Length: 354
Image 1 (cartoon, rainbow, N blue to C red):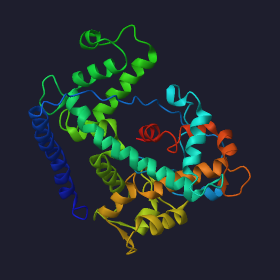
Image 2 (cartoon, rainbow, N blue to C red):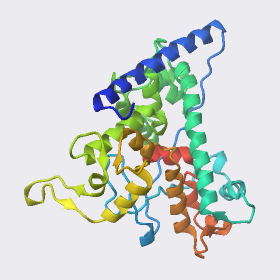
Image 3 (cartoon, rainbow, N blue to C red):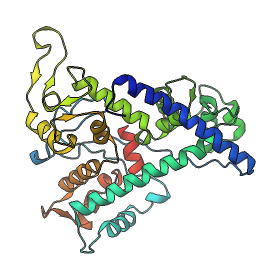
Image 4 (tube, rainbow, N blue to C red):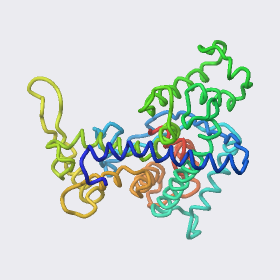
């Protein structure tokens, strides 16, 4: 499917809207017949992390990293989100939390985390998060879609749910001042972020979300439609001959856009790193080309390369004795770094990236 042209990809995206709706209708009918109660599932309100540079990364960590718009990081260095220390029950004792995770990830029980052990743990957490997002999305969609129950969620329906989850009464949630006068700044900012994310996810109707669009709104990293969009952006950026396939030369040579003499200039900085990325990671069948299927696998958050790259970044930033592994003391010394990483806060780290 992914080897066909852009028109076929667009057709697939349209089907991605129809199929979830048919599934919604069937499962809702079954739910109604069996008289199962529809309970609202708690939505995890994810705090926004700050992108801080804890320290300059060493040169041996230089590599390709694609940003959401398809651009390669001009510094050719891995980046990691460094979040604030979280508040709430799960982070009341961050040292205890980190120690528990450390012991679970330490497969051989030697009191150290190797790159392999850390990568394995992060990969498992990514898989668990994405699978849970897919399972939970339908139940939450059904519980919010109630005024009217029509297989789509309006902004008003979602916003009422959001306010109630934040502790406001049902009466306030349904009859609130549209400008939310009296709410604190952080709450208003959260609403504005939600509205911006909603607008980005709503493709068919700006005021309503389908089942898959709702998944893209709350968990873009779990949405197939979002990943397909990122593949299109990658092709738009690098596919200079428009054949829906990336060659090693296309991926490795950046062409600038602009006015004057620099327009169309090809940049060679970092070309060796990009060629290695293409050969080792992107080109799965080693035929010198990357089709849509390979691009999809490359971008898919479940691809083990993402877990391996984050584990390598955590290791390089925290391994003060340079023994190639992490002790619990070294992790404690970089507590904020680990609490904001996918090792601990998988959902928060993903949502910040997307």
